Every structure is written in C-alpha cells, then in structure tokens.
Length: 118
Image 1: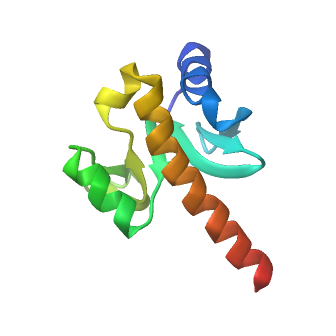
Image 2: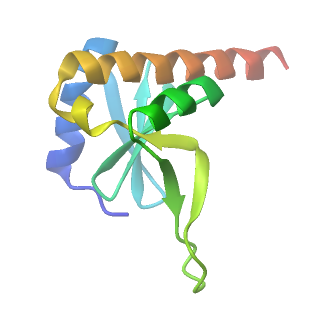
C-alpha cells in the first residue's frame, strides 16, 4: 500500500481547486482531506474517491472499480465499496478530476453532517 511522496503531491495539486487538500498517513496508504473531511484515499499509487451509490454507478460507467483490499490470508482481494478509483482520464485533467473530487467531497461532507446530528 505504499504511496510515494511524488504521487501524493501530484494528487494534492490535481485536486487543489477543491480547497486546501491535505494528505495524512493511514494504514499504509494516505487519506485525503479537504476542510477536515476525508473524501479520498491513495493506495499503491492509485486515487480512490469516497462514493455513494450514485457516484459508484457514474464511476463504473467511466470504467472505474472499487478499492480492493487484500487481507493477506490467501483469499482473493475483496472490494471495499465505499471507495472507487478515480477515472484514468481525470488523472490527466485537473477540471475533470475536480468535478469527480467535488462529488466525493459533497458526499463525505453530507455523511459528516449526518454523524454530527446523531
């Protein structure tokens, strides 16, 4: 789940139009935050967005798939459906990346508001 400092910096720059994006170590990967809300993660040099069912469907249509977790017990990796890969086309297009990123951030902020109400 290694993440290079170069890729981390690239992703933070790619999504910088969303606001101040920070990266924090997390379980061998990196959590991405904007306004103190985690909305994405990086694992093995791949960017994954926090996604609700609508965003998952849109990402699937764009050719993306879920974050796969390998628990190292000889089993096949299992999907962690809460996070889906950023479409490859967006990795070279800041506007497209920020459109996807904003959807993930909106969802993450919505979920945080619901938690605070509980």
